[in-house]
Length: 387
Image (cartoon, rainbow, N blue to C red; front, side, top):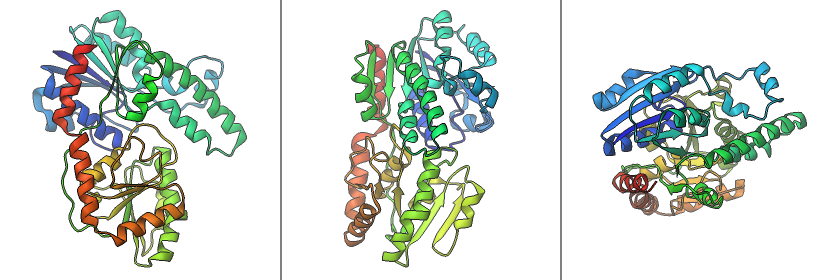
């Protein structure tokens, strides 16, 4: 089967959880399909690096890229106020990308996978030039992320504007769900939401695939957070950790250490570094960082879908304490739900007083039972056949 995979940013390098999830999905496609072509948008935030693809796939994958200027423009944002279209989505439309897509559609693809709703403006072009099945891979319900964000905005004028943008994004997203042949949702919570829309197309909860690797000697006094800080919920989370939660942890345990890492680390975060807080910036190996810096704290206040960083932590047997939003779609007994400082402190005490090895085993068992690559590829194959 010949397929085309479209993404709104390059899969490699793996700069954030979204890239990690796309990498996992791309590996599935290469494993189960005879021919895979991949076309991606590249941006000023996410430049394209062909070599990074070739090092992983060699000649098993044909990759091409088109640069799209997705920078926010004050003029275009103002102009969009008088349009019914979504400015969030419009930033990803490019005539150059559309022309490259038309060129590729000369191939007789049987399935076209679209990563996220931000590439759905190209669906009309796809339907015009191809008879392929079109499958949307929905890592998040995008408008829900913005609805959560609205609750945190204090500036009334900004709140009004973001509500307006979110309403248009919601209308676009819900309408586009109807136009594709199938939807792959990474989160069981998002899957249930989409199913309740009573659409006529096929819907499948297809989780992120991951293999387990046991981390030894987890230090109970150490805590960490890692993420891409060009995504606001991650920046909000780390500021809450540094300014609100960790000072309370230090009152209970003066020997506690907090480690902060991730791509796009803003310079101002380094001002918080001291004997108890280490700001690492971008790390060479996410796996090595996670396995050597204790327990993951994840106070995420907005978002949709599954937090990839949490699944990665569980795959190494690392306990996680996080908000309800952070743990959405994850049912592991190695995860501890916390909404307030007191909740975090209580769970930290529970982990500290119990055998961490038993918690680690629960994490590994959960990942092996729910996220094994072979089983996910079987589900994907059956889904494509049913669409």
